Image 1 (cartoon, rainbow, N blue to C red):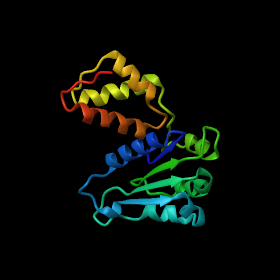
Image 2 (image 1 turned 90 degrees about the horizontal axis):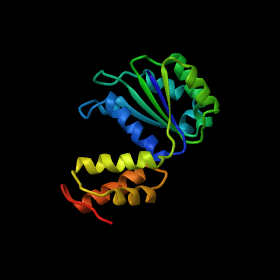
Image 3 (image 1 turned 135 degrees about the horizontal axis):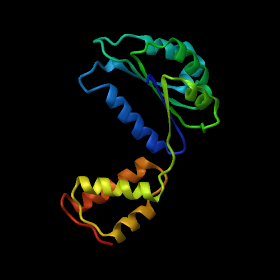
Image 4 (image 1 turned 60 degrees about the horizontal axis):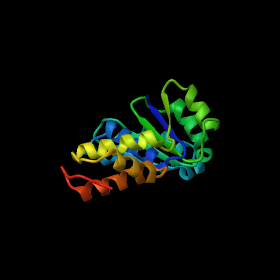
Length: 181
């Protein structure tokens, strides 16, 4: 895929997935000019700005990654144009905050063979429990089912905020530690 559309109500999950995609296509040794960040307001004012950035060649070669975030309505026309004209070595990662599955941007991207549309919705209790288990597993923290249930029911609908709170508990317990109610 060349285009990755992230949308939905969980801004933290969008940010997390966007960062994972960016790291997948770049590394710390890459040319800083290989990654460009644009806003929907910028591309809304200048429809060719997105194409220009996607087609620019990084100073030291490699992939060009453009991170675009903001209101889907403002960026829709620029994304339509970019999909037709972008270099296939480039990657476009879009975080659209105000769209749902019926939005024109999502409908358009769903039809493209070069695009992956990824919905980012709030975690349910099963997802939150898994997140707790994953993070505590990394630190080898011991806990009971009651602790897992208590933590999971107190977490919210933003993945980034939930991860931050769980990591605070992991820090509190310490590596190889344990948590009780």
